[in-house]
Length: 347
Image (cartoon, rainbow, N blue to C red; front, side, top):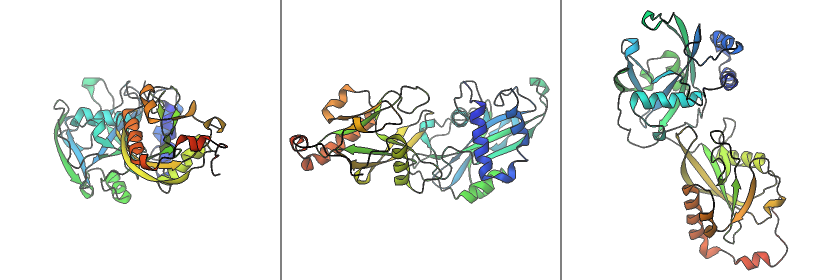
């Protein structure tokens, strides 16, 4: 299903909160969102939404391709939204995959922009009698992606639509509005974690896992056991702040001891792009049944040898195995923890 108008409106309003002087320029888009039409459909006139991917490499260069439809102008990869695009971000990922052969998994979000468009550009499109299209406008949502790996992937062009490709420095980006915003955001192309999670252990070899709601295509790790945590927001000062906010939202009574960074892992989002995650560790010895759980189904303790019986990602399983092996020498016997009164969290 294409992106919902309500989600598009939230994206636009959040963008205008950052760029209030552009409200008049986006008046046509806002008017379209007030109409009972799909503003993401290419048949919607007098204007509709398109999406572009601003791909930045480790040298701070931006991928440009020659669009045959524009006479070979060098632009960032992008185009119309298709019915199978779940979100605007997903549409941008699909376009760069189709036009330049860069798969979503080779890309990640930037800390500065996360999943928000850096620019919404309005430009006029001339009439195309061959396609029966009158003159209209495109509202182009431009999303920033970094390359995950040091070396850029091989560019495989879609020659039916693309005539060539090149990497341009930020100062040489062809769109004036995009160029100005990229320079202001100081994007360097170096990936860093944009999610935070926590490996909660009891010091006796057990790990606290969160069973997520079964909502495929909506919730990351739908219906599986996973670590507590979530994605960074623009308001979070750092990743520890991200984690503490997520814990306060998901399970507010959980208070951890010895909270600190452990490892940086990589996962795959619902839309297929790579997500670097800062994993923290923290100790807690309470009864999860006594915690208020605001998101998900339940919390349970598990020993590493029980993980093969669970629906859990291989990455999370391996992470727990690794931590358990590293902590084996420091683990207290389970009998010590279970011999007396249950230890509560240190709130």
